[in-house]
Length: 147
Image (cartoon, rainbow, N blue to C red; front, side):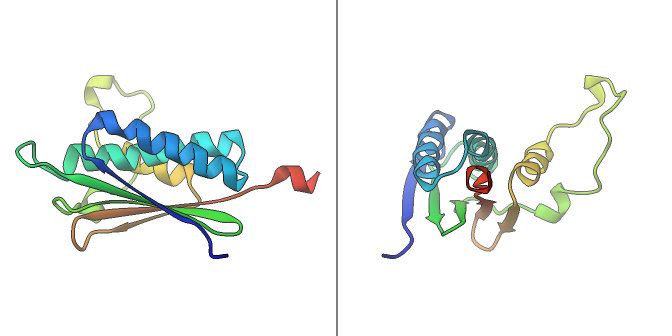
């Protein structure tokens, strides 16, 4: 049997992101991920979907987000792809800026979601050929097997 690949297409609207989160929960739970790993992945995937909702399409045009869950033996690869305006990753992610001792008025929004994706996933890749594709990978820890 080949490794399962699950595809999901949703409108690029915030109210549909929950469908992606629920699907991720089902797929990751079936694959053997822990509750904590699933929660981390839900945050990272939600960030990727939210970026597509907010930045890929202008509000005049209808857009779609394609999400693919690819299960492998010891990891999951999640692709979140839109066909809207491409995202300039290098310009968005510059040197990290410390947020300690700063007023909330001085904090500029943007880039924190990308930081969280990197912190919560084992691998994050951006492709910006036609639209934007975010590829998130997480390995299964399987702590229970080591005990």
